[in-house]
Length: 163
Image 1 (tube, rainbow, N blue to C red):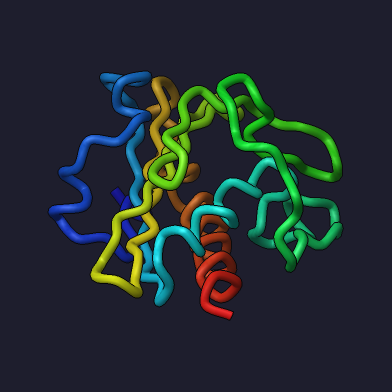
Image 2 (cartoon, helix red, strand yellow):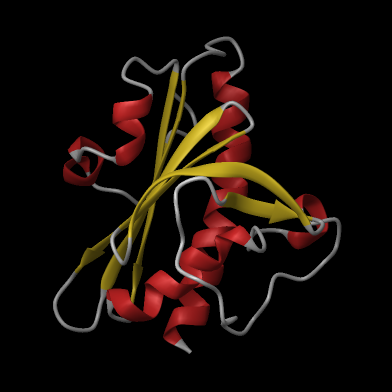
């Protein structure tokens, strides 16, 4: 399907993500990935900060409010917490979290898992898998739209974690 993969290897696509347990037979699956030149402990705080802002194109999905460019003093993520925030309002829910390793949330009919895979001492593969149980007819549109937004999000976190 158009837009179902960006920046991932076949081995990364074959991995088991948290979202797979929640949506075992998805109508849509999409994977994204980027290498971050920083260890997982520098990447995770940015992923965990997803609860306060989307970190993609703020003018689209945050009504022009800029996502924070500094780390905030936030409590650890917990199941049931808001998954993200748009225009200052919570959106979605965290459904699973393995601190420093994987965050899975449900949002707008989709389930998303962000996964950190260490690559040596100073690099991390930041992976995202999105699944939807329904919507086979709109899956190509969702995949392409998510590709644009998720690519921006992952590249933003990469830049922030590397700085």
